[in-house]
Image (cartoon, rainbow, N blue to C red; front, side, top):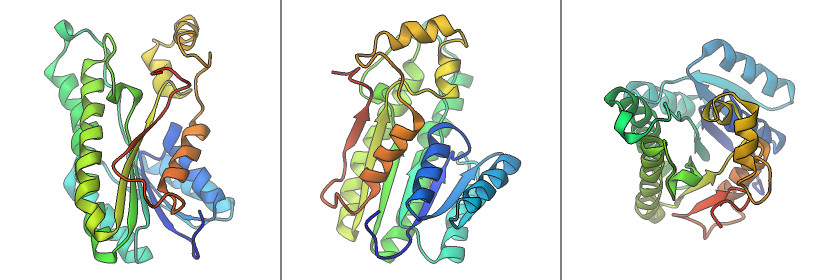
Length: 251
């Protein structure tokens, strides 16, 4: 991490997939890791696993769709650890992939409440704390589909386009008080989300990976290492950017 003391890291949606891998990656870097999510049992188990790796860790419940939860989350981080150095806004959902002509307001609300409102509320309270301390780094988890579209993915894609816009605007606001805001945009990653997206069928997953120049899905650990780099003070001039990690798919 290239810091003189152990940084305080917050990861939302930390209980599975990329969030979980990122928690372990930061722990291996010697950071104090606060993990957050909606399942208390899984969250407590994750915090215990991280502690067993020799890092200080704590689980704090939060449903990012509700501002009271986010406000409480950041207040607890500030109270228990005194500051917040890095926030990874990872919590998200793909919703139900359907054509636009079959889209529903319920699916739209489900996806946008988590992927858009949740990121907005998270940044609002993270930035308030980081502004008061005069430093910080925020990484929003976007998607390759935040830069393009795909059949059946209109609502998810639109939500991630919104994350890209939030990232740019927040970066411009935060730069004056020493905070950087960036995004990491994964392509197809071997997580439960990809399994759901391909209908749980191995042949569908294989067909999808064949469209990727690398001929494979990425791993959560690869995304985690990208997040660590973007978040670190090794790149102090990097802000307002979205780093795509997709095995060459967009290219």
